[in-house]
Image 1 (cartoon, rainbow, N blue to C red):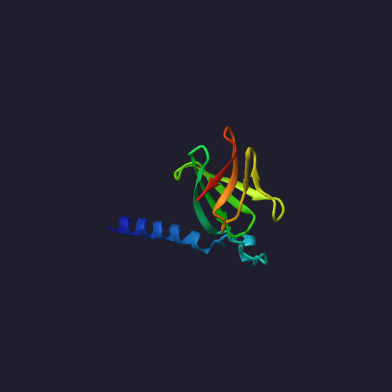
Image 2 (tube, rainbow, N blue to C red):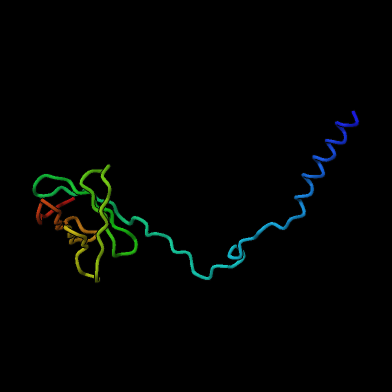
Length: 120
């Protein structure tokens, strides 16, 4: 029994010996961030348009007023189009969209489909 008690005491002492070591702290963890939190823009309007070639285009207009996303199907990955200046079309490589979130029609250019008129 004395051996078991002595061995247990040594194990406990070895375990407690590591408790007095300082814990490393990340220096940046205590710094405050002075930059304001910027959230991504929300969707202002989502519209489904029927185009002249009888295809569909799903367009989401974002709250920043200069971004819209376009999809060919509801499940497709959206393509982000941006407006360089107010009043100019939304554009991305191969895409161009002229219209507004409140309008009933747009002019849409997509790769392989050319420019065409689309209506809600």
